[in-house]
Length: 270
Image (cartoon, rainbow, N blue to C red):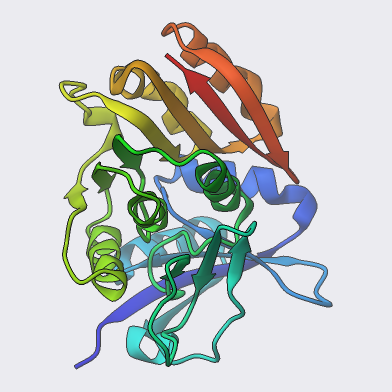
């Protein structure tokens, strides 16, 4: 029997996008998708969960539609075009007939956020392609595992990836098996707010809501090795200053801010 997932969906006005994301964050949603459709004025906001209860709760709070998706049917959908990250990377969203090239990865559109198209992920991917890391990498809020997998493809020596959602961790582990013959990434189901900071990394990647980034600033900063870098995304422009202040207070230095539409990625050095 194929696995299933429940969804909550609602069409929203682009001008209210920030407001809706804040509402989902307040309701405890750490992952969501926002789709812009050609010739549609509104955007489609969606949340997916393995259980019906959480999405029904969202319908009770915000209206919208709840339904059921069979994952096997979803993954057989019409293939989407690849996502190209400069000249270095190509993210495919379906299994090719030929073996993967050295610069390719397969990340199917699935139950976990992060197939490369969204601005928050794309900016991190582009930065990784420009500045690959050979040492230790920590990927917080890994979703589909795309950032950890790209780090492995580009030569990272040791990679740990975490997400609080067991379905996301399971999907990320499956995506590693799609792309590599052996498993090298350590996947963990964990809450970023519970990080111990006992192990430090040369590059910490965090594609999370700004509220979580601010709340967990002390724990996230403690994971960066001296001389290492922290790259954070998932930040709306209006939230940028608050996030910068939280990490400067921990002793990190802002070295670059990258913007794509309403979204911002920040790069810090310890």
